[in-house]
Image (tube, rainbow, N blue to C red):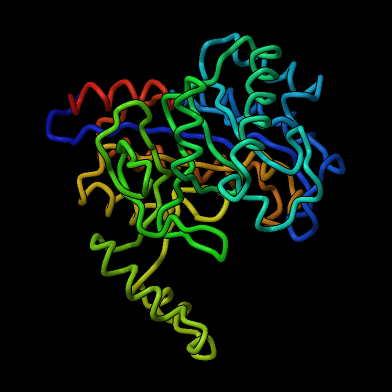
Length: 330
């Protein structure tokens, strides 16, 4: 260990889920989970690098015999963690057609969320022999009702916050950027409870003053200014880049300034994320590149090498990270 380098906890989480055309309707049954066949190769790659991934697994994957067998063989190696990932549209019981609003867990009646969560947890326990400790909602977002439910069901970690993001149905735009214990009345901010810790994914900008960068970003992306193409101009001039620690959408080299900004801001955790459905070419329409698996793998390797050079890196599953974080702030 180089004592002159900062220590950093590195989490890599994968939303392990079905693939379908994301521009279409939310499917109850019309999907595939063949992307899971790529996970053993990905896991071998992780183990060579020392990464201990967390697979946030949804009902569609867990109920598929082939996919469940593949994941179970990895779980049995004790080199990863299984978390719970709730996609309302394919997680029974089904309560009618799922639209854009209903695709976000926080917009469902809490009784429906509880029914779906119970079914998901039971399936994960039956097929993988685990009781998940960590939860991530499908399509991001969390509220106090769901956090309270998670606490009652024995969860200790939520990872549903997606910093700097909002749409017409929920917002995570101003959420706390480092791990924190969320206030149930407004989960974007820390509170006094100590039962569930929030571990958001890493997003930000190429400059360290994230709050100022967000104000500028919101100004230049206002619909009235679309015709000026300011986002592209600011990007190419390197004045302002909104960045994600996500190897599907951000190249290895473009993730470097995000890592630098996070380290300059004293963040104790780097949390990379991706979707298993991006491991095969053109499966969802989200990642358009050919050789998607190789692109993702190369971007991850680039980030790990860069982070190793700048920090003393500690690879953790999300539950292992939570233990370290809790001990640090006691």
